[in-house]
Length: 137
Ligand SMILES: [Zn+2]
Ligand SMILES: [Zn+2]
Ligand SMILES: [Zn+2]
Image 1 (cartoon, rainbow, N blue to C red):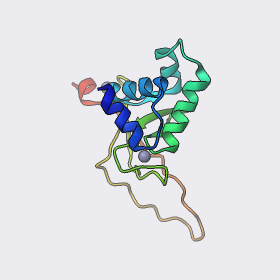
Image 2: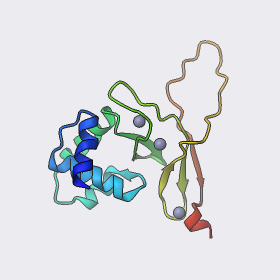
Image 3: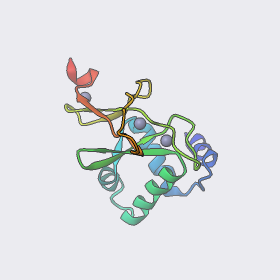
Image 4: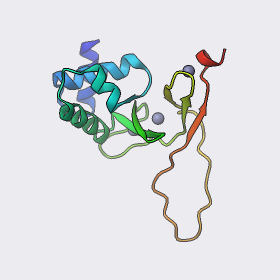
């Protein structure tokens, strides 16, 4: 486990510090999104600024992507070939109102939007809300 996490970081050109490994393993184990607030509660002994920098480094290096859900940014692991060169995870996300988890809908196609002439699209933040399989039953 630890070895593969180190490899995962190395593949993205991230030096594996103890904090970075802890945060990555938390995100891997959790299998859902985590916000900075959640991480602060999980690693309450750690310096908040270090946690924040860890997330920013991961995001910059293409390891995670942030999604704004109801005013809170949550971070999810990238599965596409994201790197420092750029992110390719343009997909909708699903927010479960039952258990408050956010997941990537990597297979879902993004709708195409016809913009007025001269408009330049930078980002599409598409969040679907509903209940996940565990909560719907
Ligand atoms: Zn990405
Ligand atoms: Zn749920
Ligand atoms: Zn995603």
